[in-house]
Image (cartoon, rainbow, N blue to C red; front, top):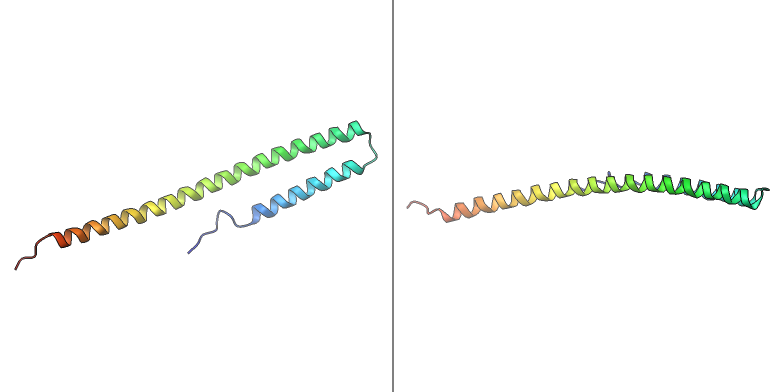
Length: 100
């Protein structure tokens, strides 16, 4: 059974929403009746906000991925250990001589 707690799609939707809003705001600034210098300053501020938000988002994604990998690693290790124990039991069962 697959567990999709890590990537349920809400992060992608949120990122698309934020990116769309920022692109729309940038276009509004470009077409607004302001001086070029003021428009450049506003766009620079917008770019800084975008950088902060993407840094936060990538940090969150990185934490989720690391948590997911740690969970999967522990599941695989438990299965590996269980398999080794079962193999050792079966090996011991066949190696001990049966009394006749």
